Image 1: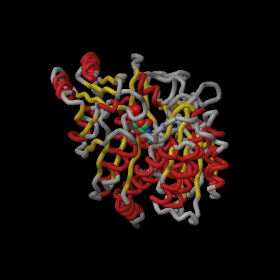
Image 2: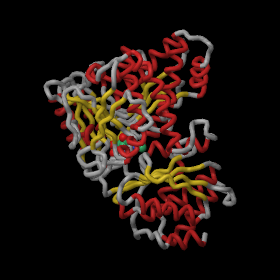
Image 3: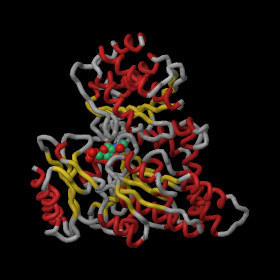
Image 4: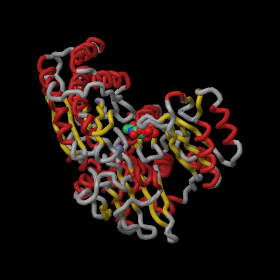
Length: 527
Ligand code: 16G
Ligand code: ZN
């Protein structure tokens, strides 16, 4: 404990500052985070001792402006930190200097942590100018508790999740290095598109907006391992522009327009990563110059349709479901349920909620509309597929099973991953011979509008039914219902944001004017 306090004085907490471990960890202006990083180094050691596993610490603020930063802990199988420990994280970050020891002791006792147990922490960071010194503060925390760490340096968030999972499963998930990540994904991708090259469908051309972040850097490394079938043109690669500034997945999704710094010719297929490369959206312009966005819903539909078709071919009766949030476009939900006959579930916003729900199925496809998502395969599903793929036949069944097996290997099951999702999408489009426009035409999004409303206290709004209905304040839901009833194909909900001091409003309806009007009326009802 002496060392903890000694090092702690090098990372003093600004008195009175209070932060919360939210849906995406801690996130705020970088200059307020040094003490938080040090303390998350301490907490990661405790979590590592408790779980007897390697724990990850990722320094990033994802799509936030470059001046911000943040930190997230990664649990043993590459998952988000369990909810119970989020409270410890908050308490530890907010303890004043003189309370630090008491809070540490409380966690140790509460969790019955054996302090003589060995610990190991893996650290990664994004390209923000503040990330290097902040990750050094994490290292100080780990060192103060006399524990081992491995600094992976500049990595995407999903790469760190991947490495953690590999290290805690004795390499069963893959080789626990960034090179191992490239090898695993590229092998699977090259296998998948091999058939396409043979069929002569030609090369795949894709423009990538790297958000001037870590994704661009890592995609260049990945590219060296890829079969030349895929031709990538990288924009916003971070040499000139500022991170997330008028570019990146969040900008494209929210602004509904292409990022700066990229030339979009009609029907060119383009995609955008976010600042830590765990989200991706696609987009293109049609011949009339109209911008089209293919968001997480379109991605989930493409991937689940592909997997379902393969499951039919292999004849395995595995239960597949798609998990969305309240933001999923009504057309996407209807298409999946009515046309594809795939069960759809709605989870609360935030990756951990979707991930958790998706784990209930043999195959769980989850995506937030904002482009964060992946596919989870249960052990049973994976075993059955790999078994079929290895059988001594050459029939179509086996071929389909091999395609499924390569798809499993290409997917980063630990967390949404822009690089992995991009390669999955490119492989599917090429195998199905789909252009981006044809993919977009699978269903038509309902016009929708998102607004944010500033209120005195956003916590007065309480929601239920995966945030689709409000239970408080009294009377609000009735008002929303009455407004929704005025329009066709309409739906609306409000929810307090988990990352900003605002209430978010979502509305969709048969026309853009109606969606706009409904969103506006609902936002007035919130006051
Ligand atoms: C966080 C979540 C993201 C969610 C967003 C919603 C993770 C890793 N990230 O960034 O999934 O869409 O919050 O923000 O879970 P909001 O609550 O402000 O609308
Ligand atoms: Zn992100």
